[in-house]
Image (cartoon, rainbow, N blue to C red; front, side, top):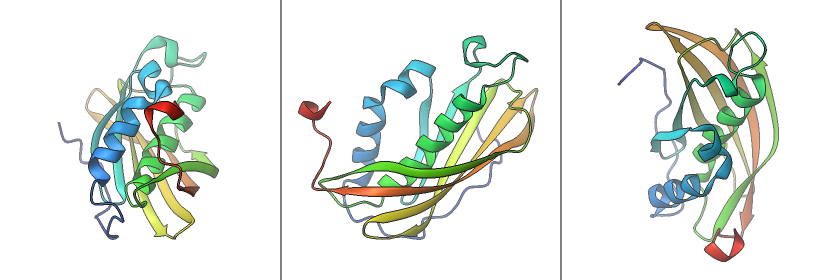
Length: 161
């Protein structure tokens, strides 16, 4: 279902022709995303969208998505956006991010998107956003700026997990 969430366009060419498979396989290995029930809904060169249905065990004391959960999902969306542009035989690590919580994350579904702003050889700058959907109303609840590090020669393999 389309919620009308703004998303960036593919502005950068991927350095790996297998970028889509690489991102989807890496997401499938993420224990944290599996634990909280997040799903990778879409990925494009330099962009990513992740959905997370609400569960009470992901909430804080007022019943909203917890800020830590929001940060985790936006970090992953922006991280996978960056990873989609990285060369084969590399992996990604977040090295810094700043998140602003704009509104309570009060909704039945969280939608997180990530978009690459600058794709460098070693550092990638991304932005991420989170929205919540409640009874058909969409609220922008968080925005992030992130720096990623390309781990050259460190492709994720079954042995490294």
